[in-house]
Each structure stands twice: as C-alpha cells, then as structure tokens.
Length: 330
Image 1 (cartoon, one colour):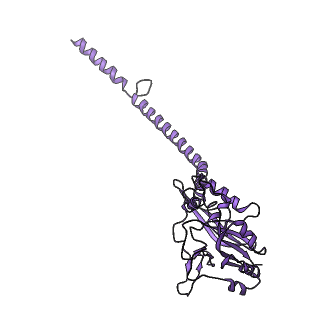
Image 2 (tube, rainbow, N blue to C red):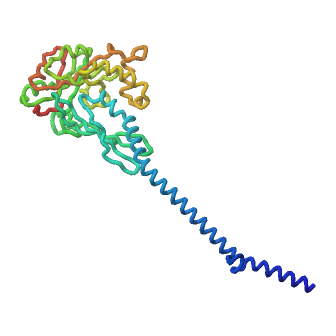
Image 3 (cartoon, rainbow, N blue to C red):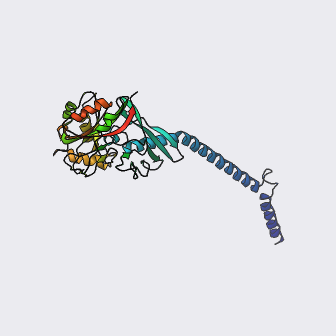
C-alpha cells in the first residue's frame, strides 16, 4: 500500500514538472502559449495593415476614375450636350468644367453663349450635380425669368445675364397684344448687333425660310411646330417646352435634326425627356419615322446689325419680330 502511495506521489510530481516554469527545455507551456498568441497577434496586425494599405492605395487610384465615370454618366443622362441644342434658341455650350469635387459628390459646369452677328456673347452657365452613388441632375430651384412687376408692359429678362428674352407667337392664334420691336431696332445705333425672334403667320418649310430671309442677316435657329402646344400667351425663348434646331452651313439643318430625333427614341438615356418625346410623337409618320417633309417652321432666330434686321420686316410671312440679346458689334 505504501509503495502504491509513493508511486502516486511520483506521478503527481512528474505532472507538476510538466507545468513547472523551469521545465521542458527551459520554457514553460504558458510561455510557449503566450509566444504563440503574440505571433498570432503580430501576424493579424501585419495582414490587416497590408489590407488597409492596399485599400488606401487602390482607393487612391480607383476613386478618381470612379468619380470621373459618375461625372460622365451624369452628363450623358442629363442630355445637356444633345437635348439642349434642340430646346434652347441660339444658345451654345462650351466643354464641361469640373467646378467642385466633394468626397461623394461633384458639380460639372458648362458655360453658355449666344452667337450674335458672328460674335459670341456670354449667357451665364449651366450645371449638373452628381454623386458617387446616385444619378446626375440639374440644380433644384427657380428658373423662371425676371419680371419687373412695377414696370408697365414689362418684358422678360434672363435670370443669369439680366438680358432681354426673345418671345415667339404661334401662327393662327389671336393674341390680344403682340410685341413688335422693329421700331426699337430701327432706332438702335449702327455699332450694335442683336438677335431677333421672327414669328411667321403660317408654318413653312425650312427651305422656304432660307429662300425668304434676306442674305444680310444670319439665320441661327428654327422653331418648329409640335401639336398640342397652343397657347394664348407669347412663348418665351427659355420656355421648357419649346423645340427646334440650329441652322448649320456644313450640313442640311433639317436632315441633322430628323436623324437625331429618330435616333432619340433608341437612346435610353434620353427617353426620359418628355418634351423631345412629345415632339417625336407629334412629327412621326405611321412608320414611326420623322421625315424632313414633316418639319414645319413657325419662327426663327436671326441676328445682325439693325439696318439688316430691318429688312426682315418686309418679308410677308413675318408676323412680328421680338428683340433678345443686344451687343456691341465691335
């Protein structure tokens, strides 16, 4: 019995030696475990640091490309580079300029200008907002023109440039009063040039327009007929529902327009523009195609010096002429 007790004591002593700090080659199991834990911690920190560094470097290179992609996507979806050509009489855009880049959003700005007698005239700017995770849009707010309520028979002025806005009158509509600026044009000094909205007393073809207008004036823009847009009030040149196309010398203007509007219905980015869709639905034939013969012009924008603009008054199809922006011709 005593021998058995001695053996048990010996076994316990041997077991204690396993956990003794001075056993197992001079290192305890506790020390070994602590070292393993430290190595695991260091390995975790090292791997996490590498991953974080990779994300920072990758993000630093990838973020600008992602923002640039979102910027271009916003510009395309807004249609500002293509749709505005057909909704803004005698207004042109410069290339885009990124004016602000936040962490998750940005702003793209386009300078606007008019061409008056061959000279560019500032017409404010237009912006598109975009975000890293959302779609682009124009700034929210009031875009209505300035009306001087305290002035009798006040005209409309552009909010950005504070310059006079042209107005159109539809053929066949009996207006109570119509603005006719030919007397003002006649009294202008010869060192000025201006744009004028000519409204016709009946719809005519683009080719007829070119044949009727005097050569001394510059034809800039055609205002076309769209069914359903009948109003008893003058139509301001910045009205959101006005549709037309610019005059071109390098290509036939109406050919360029019909090619574009026929392609419009196939472009998913632009189909949300209800005004152009309404114009397409109004002009298309039974085959779903808009042809040049379907284009009827109700008015145009012309520019030139006062003595040349006065010659348009003698055109029998011209119902009235309304001044827009005026500039020094030098």
